[in-house]
Length: 318
Image 1 (cartoon, rainbow, N blue to C red):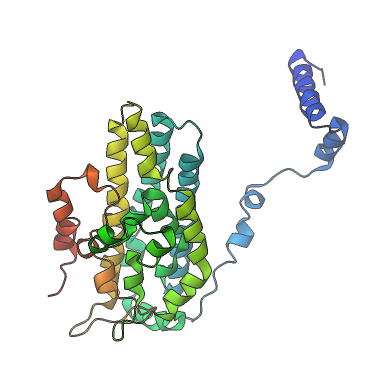
Image 2: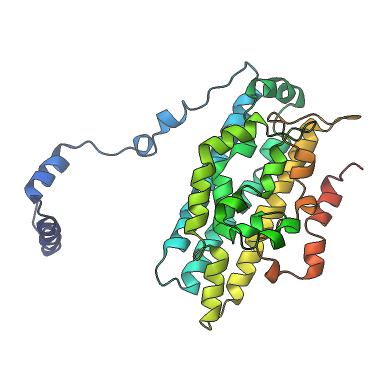
């Protein structure tokens, strides 16, 4: 083989790289010489990935249920990857922020478009049978989803609207005790915390509090305001944040609500969720009216938050 100028140039660059790290390039070349070629299945650990489904019952559709939730958590991890880049970026620019928000919105769009796997992709009788083996586990226990909410805006926005004024000067720890989603994991009959919520808090509470503490000045909303205060054109960011708000607080939750109605609404009485969560009150956005960026919406838009979607697809029983 002829040692071309291009090859010699690359060898010189490699030598400079390893010299800078105090490493012996020849040793690394020996390793390269004897190393096996990489395969697709090894790179993504395919064989391991396909062994991570462990149904609790013999119902075939339980595997669908498990795999879709695993796919969802992988997408949520992708979203968190982008959230971290935005929050940790020194000298954040509008272009960088917008590019990452577009990725986040694209991931949520993919999740929402794929949710028919959960809405129509399983036999109802199978689901209602195998779900009882999952107690007290619940999709409510997705810690990654809660972290995305914390990245989105000030921690106070995750407190029910009627409590915000009295808690506007509260500590992160006090705010955490009043987050909106805690009411969704209380026993319907007694109002006490479900085991689902107790497990969730034991695993994640300190992580959530620490994350919220670290994001007080660099969550999405604070990043937006910082760029705006510098005279930057944030019109594109405004539309991207509105889309993000809609994906997270309307469309994603309503797809879950549509699935719950499909499998758990039965006259004359609704079926309880596996974790005892109050899904009838917790999922519909028009009950919560959780809005990350109220300043970016009109009063009419907030007043009718999620209403048209619910009216069209899954009318709430009165």
